[in-house]
Length: 227
Image (cartoon, rainbow, N blue to C red; front, side):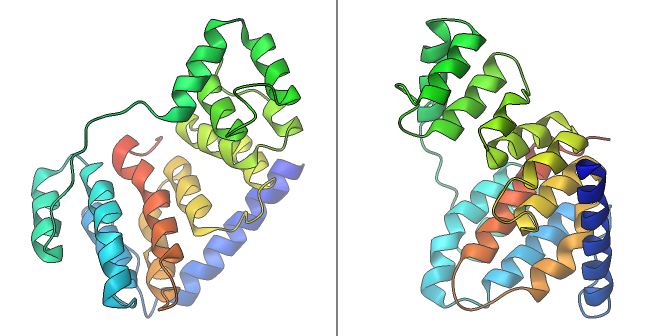
């Protein structure tokens, strides 16, 4: 029932947002969605002072690169007057710690140590648990007991599990966040419908809105849609 209610609320909220912004900011079509969505995100960034725009260029180009479209990347490098910084691949801290913890025992032991806050879970516990789930057993309802809403939402999005995703975001501090709305669209389709929200909610205060949009749309570019 909670999952159904959450799904309904999200559908109503999405419809309202789409309707409110449809006239001023039309949705992105499916044919050119990636180019259109990236333009919407950078249009939001253009409301910021030049200094803050400059700080967004690197993460923006990193998001563009997830599409695997070299022509699109070249277009944005030229438009922004910046190059993509290709740094040497380094295994993320959380992944390294999760693998080490799993190598010392099974999944049950992994969860036991996580709940106890034993090393390495005394630092970055939700992130390490999420990486452990990826490498060991996939989604696990025990995450909900520990209130790891964000980590479970990311895992559910990657696994195209809508019911688990809706349960997870209900545990987070901001379930109506743009990031989660875009992640949900990866599962249900048509992230371009949120282009109006991205443009309309732009502000000149800080980079948070743009970073949420990049974090939300990045998985669509990298992984594609579930259906």
